Image: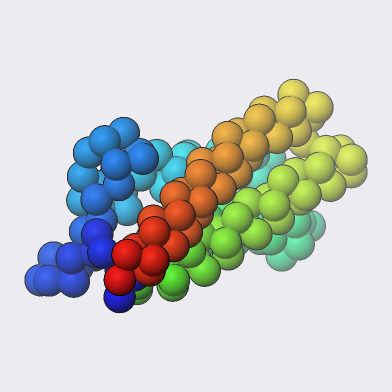
Length: 150
């Protein structure tokens, strides 16, 4: 079947991830990448509070929506209950992460964010990118090994 590790019972999708610290992940909220996505969204909201009012429907809105999309897609993919869907939503989250990175560069270049802010966001998004890629790779690896043992 390829979805070994998913418990589709009353509690929803419970996935055992040995590669992520050897323990059971009971919820997407237990994932460091989801927690990091929430922290990134909070940082984006803090940063964009200082943007000019004229950017409320421009860069402020774009940055906020992209940042919220990261943790939201991690959660939505988890809730879909299949490994294939989960990987697809993790890739969408990764795309939103690249949007945030790009938009912060633009904010810096047009004078809305400092160089220190841009550097901090680059470092934070790189950590999340590595975590997302690790989770995607882990899911694909376990899916491939599950399919070959079926």
